[in-house]
Image 1: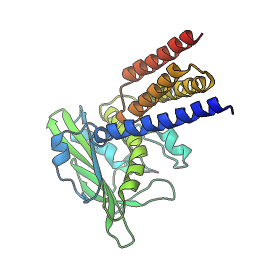
Image 2: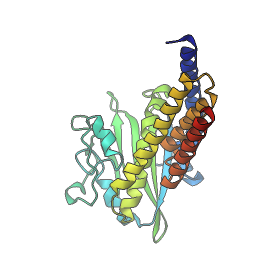
Image 3: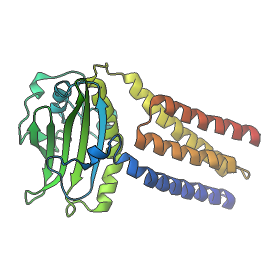
Image 4: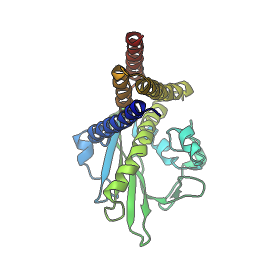
Length: 284
């Protein structure tokens, strides 16, 4: 590799990492409380642990009695995780999200295992209070809870309910660095989960097209990042391509950690594409 090309490659990698870290740090306070208001954040929930925690919420146009059966089905080998099954299955988890209420999964009890995969069941149900609380915990070797995952249902009126989800950790079991590493994939999966639960409870049919468009929006931004990055490393006057590439990193962070609506994802991708086309024309 020629010296100038190597220098531009290292510049691209370094600046992209800087923008990625800076962008994630800026968005972190928002995605850790995505959709949650001050009341959601302040409320006590069963099994709260004293270490790191995050609280997220969504308003659903349905009564708690309608939402509740969907929650009871959670878990691998049951109703799934209501998130990106394809991504979980790439990791061998064998997840299949239910698109209807399944009667045989409606009777969990305290102690029922909640599995991540067919062979990994680190958690068990620790609270069931119909139409209000449903959650599970993982315990350490000494039997003390080290991780809590709990749903709360809070009616706002006869047809609108707040669904709040909280995860909390034991500070001695999960150091801060481990929690941050876990929260990155957790955010992507959990925001999709809340959106899916909302759609299911409101009676909207599952749409493979929506999930496909979500994936395409991410791949488009990733593709523009790669294309602009390669053009930058190969051209002496390639700063406009570097700018487009870094803008793509920003878009990837926004898409991944704020679960933007499809129309906004499309606008951002179109903006990146327009920037790439303009840069190509100026370089011609």
